[in-house]
Image 1 (cartoon, one colour):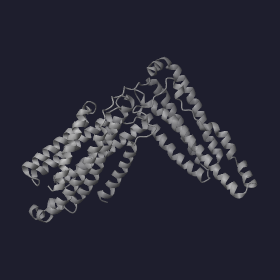
Image 2 (tube, one colour; image 1 turned 90 degrees about the vertical axis):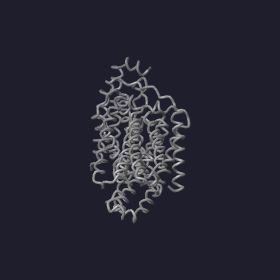
Image 3 (cartoon, one colour; image 1 turned 90 degrees about the horizontal axis):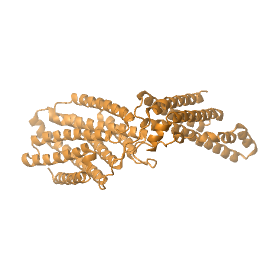
Image 4 (cartoon, one colour; image 1 turned 135 degrees about the horizontal axis):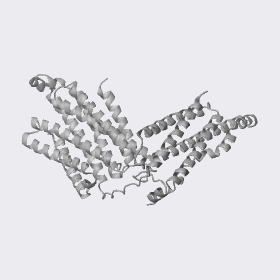
Length: 187
Length: 280
């Protein structure tokens, strides 16, 4: 195969990526790393979505679905089931946001650290890519109706436990380095 | 040199002069000295080639060698300007800069070795060497810029608007160079190879006009896109440059040491559960 068939598509693909990366985003406010607040605990990204899992679970329960199919006209029940699936997908997206916030915290800490472990950074990058792929698969299965809601509940429980432990860890670290941090971050 | 080439060369010179004025008026050389040097190299190269053209003629061998020499010199100056862009604003983040410069240096060495290997087997003619090396260096520049921007995007450290415009201009000219040089190299090493390798007198009489037409077309495209790039840079420099921001306040090392492994461990657990979700 000659160069034309390889180099030109590669360079066009790379230029699309590059132009996309150069395009200023709305959430990019500055040219420095996002700052951490003076109180480290405030920087903990609170997982918002898992809190509503009880309500979501109720709305998506098997009993509700069966009741709908039994009691409502066919078109209404179909519409309701479609809405339920959309709610579950929206909820999954919310869980991804929670995951992204936690991962983002790791990146901010790395950016503001005077020294980092290359191994840790490579591992986090690998985990983030892995999560994105898994998310895509879970999303697809949920979309096609192949993922039971009970399994989603396990995922939600994990996020909430993680957030709680991160909270504890942050509190501990803030307590350990309270004075130097307050001095440096308050400056 | 036909009228179009003459007009484009003159416009390029005027555009470059205009840009050079902007660079020094905005004191870009204080913030980005290697980019300012790159612009000066471009201007000097254009003026130098013009003088050689006036003294020795458009079809002279001196101009031919000087042209390819200036192409390679420009590629080196551009590479240095890219290296400066990589360093700009990231050096203050000592931790991630240590990671980024190692990755970029490794990548640069890899791409440079690839360039050498790519040019190695080519027929021994400066036009083919020049086209190959220029193409590969432009491709390497795009790859380095993409990796740099991926790092910046990942850690949430955006480029300033001026630097972004500089990167955009470099990227645009590199894309045009890669595509143009790839097409040109294919023609040189395929259809026109006998022009380079065969009996010079016999080949020239047959293929000289085709070679000239290909060179002229490429020259016109290159000059037009180059002027567009200069337009991007001039537009970016229309306003005074903002003062460089203060150095970031870094966290105590313990914060990273304590939190990073914990975060990674939890992310790994999270992924394990995601995999479990997918098991029947």
